[in-house]
Amino acid sequence: MMSLRTHMRDFDENNITAAVIDRYKNTPDPRLKQIMTSLVQHLHDFVRDVEPTEAEWGKAIDFLTRTGKLCTDKRQEFILLSDTLGVSMLVDAINHRFSKDATESTVMGPFYVQNPPDAAFGADIRGGAQGDPLYIDGSILSEDGQPVADAIIDVWHSNAEGFYDVQLPEAEEPTLRARFHSDAQGRFRFWTIMPKFYPIPDDGTVGEMLKASARHPFRPAHVHFMIVADGHETLVTHVFVDGDQYLDSDAVFAVKNSLIRDFTREAPGVAPDGRKIDTHWRKLHTDFVLSKTAANRAATEQSRAREQAVS
Ligand SMILES: [Fe+2]
Image (cartoon, rainbow, N blue to C red):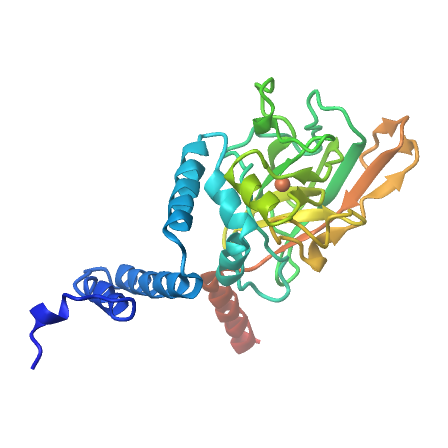
């Protein structure tokens, strides 16, 4: 019989994987054990598949080192890497198997800022930004069609040149981002400007990867929304501008047909909120349907059963 000691020597390209996995056998956290076991298996399979030269392996280490060094509180190169490799969308899809009636989710992206400034119902959030005025309104609904009052609605988007405020060295105040609350009927409305398609930051390691692969860095124009409401799953999504040239080649794979909307062109006149406007402007009407949490759905079913028993 071979001793354990013999087992733990003489590793070659075939038996090393089992030996490394064996080293995790005492991991107390079962989930961590599962993750490390799978990581080692897939990583080793990948290396056996591509058979990197030592120079290529060194290049990979250097790429990841530089990716980490680019990360600051204003820039997250690792999120970009995850986004451009389609991993962010994959994680999103796995974690948001919402009700089929609910609005679809998509990636958060790297430009969300925690706790954006509060804005009143109907506010104009353009600040000093120039661009075509855009009026957005709609309702927050639950999957059964009921309006959701007092939902937190965080909004953020690019300016007319395709930049977010956090990318502009001169921007001191948050612009083109705000937090709204839906009213008692679940409604929201605000003014801003039209967003534009934009390249993800491509002057770092992710840009190197895209260029080396003949991939472009562009994302189609969109407005980001994050909606948080009691009894409902948090919805992180975008609304995309119909007709954008990059809808079919988004650098981060985030476009879903159900999230594309017509941002209609409107003639000078009176907007739905009564504002007189003497230039052309754009209008977006869009509702968001939230998936109930499992606990909320169970409670609704229980109360429905109780009503039926009484009647
Ligand atoms: Fe974005």
